[in-house]
Each structure stands twice: as structure tokens, then as C-alpha cells.
Image (cartoon, rainbow, N blue to C red; front, side, top):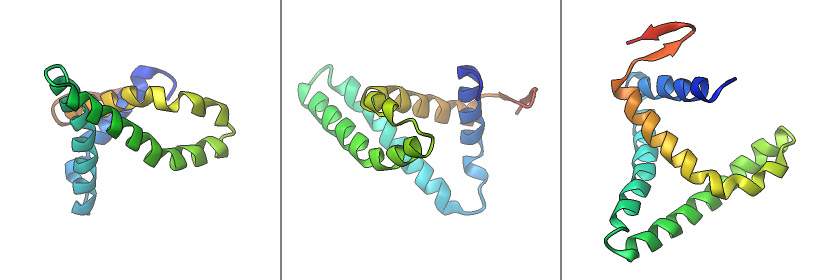
Length: 119
């Protein structure tokens, strides 16, 4: 996408289709990914009252990064962008936030696609 808004709007559109896939296994995988990312928000908020939740948040963040790194590395290598991998760990919160927000808005909000408002 050319702009951040177009990128985010695309993710909202994708999220809006989650319940309409013929293969219902896809829905459950998407729901699991959404809940996993949502757990970061819950842990962060819970960490305000109990630091143990912040520790768990950080451990989960590191685990998420390690698990996703091989895939992201292969994509970065394909596009010859390995130098950007040094930012990967620090951009995880942005990825988590847009996954939560786009997933939520995809179920309840209108979006633009090819110049039209949909839903």
C-alpha cells in the first residue's frame, strides 16, 4: 500500500472477511491469532497492578519475536531488506496494536476499497 491509511484500511477489509471463509478452520486460526495478540493488551493493563504480568508480557513478546523471525527473515531476504531486521523486535508492539485494532474494526466498521465505502 502507498500510505499508512491504505495499509490499515486493507487490514480492516481483510479482517471483515474472516467470518465468510468457506473453510471454517481459517476462522479459528485467525481467532487464535487475534486472541494471542489481544492477550498482550490484557497483560500490559494487568501489569499496572501486578508486575508479574509485565514480566509475562515481556517473555511472550520475546517468544513471539523468536517464533516469527524465521518467516520475516525469509521475506526480508527475498526482498533484499535484511538490514531492516534490526527494527523487528521494536516494531512488534505496532504489529500487535494494528492487529487488535484492525481485527476489531473489521467486524464493526465501514472501510474503503477501490474508492468505495463498503458495508
